[in-house]
Amino acid sequence: MKHDAKDRPPPAPTASPTLAEQVGAKAARKLKARRNGTPGVWFGLGMMGLIGWSVVVPTLLGAALGLWLDQHYSNGRSWTLALLVAGLTLGCLNAWRWVAREDQAMHDESADKEEGDD
Image (cartoon, rainbow, N blue to C red; front, side, top):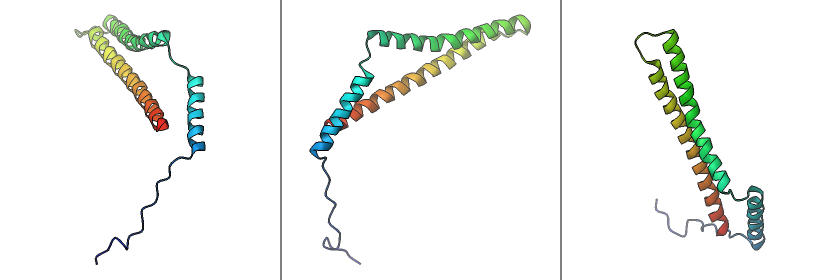
């Protein structure tokens, strides 16, 4: 069975936003920008410090636990080195996950802004 172009329903017209919707979207963006504010230099330095601590804390905890294990259960293996590396790995993965999440949030915000500008 063959269908002609006449048999198909016409495509639905694309609804362009009305002037009121465009004005409402711009107003909402401005209010959101006022609420959120622009992060400054101190915010960036604070975030670098937060990422640094998210790596340092698990590394030091691993080293401390390794030292304690070496002192109490010495069996020829270096628990300090093993747990230091494990803590460093865990800290780097934690920092990477946090940075990826923040990067995704920034990309989502910029995509929202670009959609609103159309």
